[in-house]
Amino acid sequence: MAVDELQAIIQRCQILEEADFKGEDFNLFQVAGQKCLEDGYAAQLLEVIQNEKNKVIIKNMGWNLICPLVRCIFTYKQEDDKREHCLKILHQLAQLCNPKELFLGLLEQIEQTSAEQVCQTVMLLLQPLQTVLLKLQNKKAYSVGLSLAMIMNQLTPLPVPYTKQQIQEDKLGLCQCCNAVVDFAKPFVNEVVKNMEKSSEYNDMELKEELLKFCMKSLKYPLLTAQLEQLEGIEEHPFRHFAIEIINILWDIRELIPLVFLHRKGKSPHWENQEFADLEQKNSADSLACLSYLMFVQHFGIGCFPMVFSPPYLLQCNMTHIEVLLKRTEESVLSKGLDLFESCLLRMEDNSLLHQYLEFRDFINVPQDLVKVMTLCPIEHLRKKSLNILQLFIDKFDAEGKYTLFRCLLKTSNHAGVEGYIIKNIKDQIHLSLMKACDNIWFTGHHLISLLDLVLLLPEGAETDLLQNSDRIMASLNLLRYLVIKDSESGNQTGVWTTLAKIEQNFLKPLHVGLNMSKAHYEAEIKNKKENRREAHSSNTVCSVTVSGEKMPAMTTEMQLQVLHSALFTFDLIESVLARVEELIEVKIKAVMDENI
Image 1 (cartoon, rainbow, N blue to C red):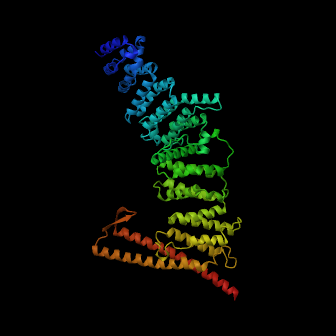
Image 2: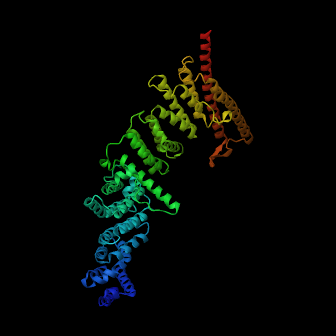
Image 3: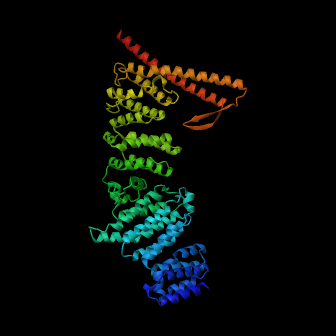
């Protein structure tokens, strides 16, 4: 019987001195204890452990029972008495065992657990692990750091619940586990706080650094990808609660403000391998970006925030973080970048952001990243939001800033729709200047002529793909039409009449030639398709179309003809606006000539 075997081993070890215990004794104790647990004799094993005579034996050998003990706890149902006995055994082991040996045993159990049970295992072992760590005298900071790192490394592969239903179900227990880990860390946070209160020159930085590393890891996972908006029907959002607790720890250990403003990263290890160094830097950047989102969008910890910084300075501080978030493709991360950018911009008055800010690299990179979201993101509401934020960003700059930003985006966007949007913005700024709404030298005279050189031209002359560039071309023609109507040749505030010959050479004439070539090509294609259809005696003939290297669904001949006719309609539209522009120019020139006569 398992209990008899255990008692026999106990009696033999009771007469030995602690130093005389051999490896064989440890193995026999582990096997007998495991058999007791597996055969359902947990109550008897608990009695053995609680017996004062066995204190030395349990101190040295008890940690070997952790693995079978955890396995049995998960085997029994919640209300089973045997499970309750196992939990008491675990509590007793935490009190009686050699702290160093039990510490290693607990970590080994956490490390070896399966992904499906990792959260349950961590939550089960947090209390005994905390008890053991509080007993440790040597290398306490290192052991706390190792524990937190091990736990976070085991949790990180788990998917983060995102939808309301996933958060409520919490299938793997991640939401509950994260908050349990914070509670586990609190005594060590309190220890750091007490030590800092005792001395203004707190020198024992090791435990503080380990807690800082834990907070940084938590900001990257799970908080960076977690849904942190308040959800209806969830009274206490687990990830919002976790985020607040992490912010509180950072505040308590006096690292919150340095992280937000000084981008302090703690003692980063020196890596000989550059790949490890780059990964460390990226992880830190992700964590700091998430921290800024929590502070400035969710307003966690905002009560600790010194209200002395100007909105432009806050935007400048956050642009690095916004850039980090906008380069990601996950909806949960990308949306945080857009929210953070929007939040910073909404604090500012229109036309208040000085053009000098565009000398900072981030102020050029971020709008370019925003354009990529607008044009490449598969999620419609994020594309729309990014467009609104781009307009918000434009509105905040002074006139010279808008001018510089327009030039930059026209040169870098490589997207006709975006270029068309920027050209419409240029037209709006010119309108404000002509209406005397503001004294604006940047959208009149020689500055505007320089900008028009980028706008009123075809990128590849007559060979330009007019269909692909139709948005840009239509916006350019509408701008030119507006200039011709609003600016008289005698006044020439915009300078358009001075540069008319150049516009005709670089834009209008090549556009005529391109339209003629494109229309002829598409009309020939239509004729060819119709002849092929007659020859096939069927309109169900299909062909494959490849776009950007990906095969699109097969198209019937009828569908192909619809596409070709749509292209012709676009060319006709461009041609009609072009004709109207040329007619207006001719009328204006004739009127001036008549006046001179």
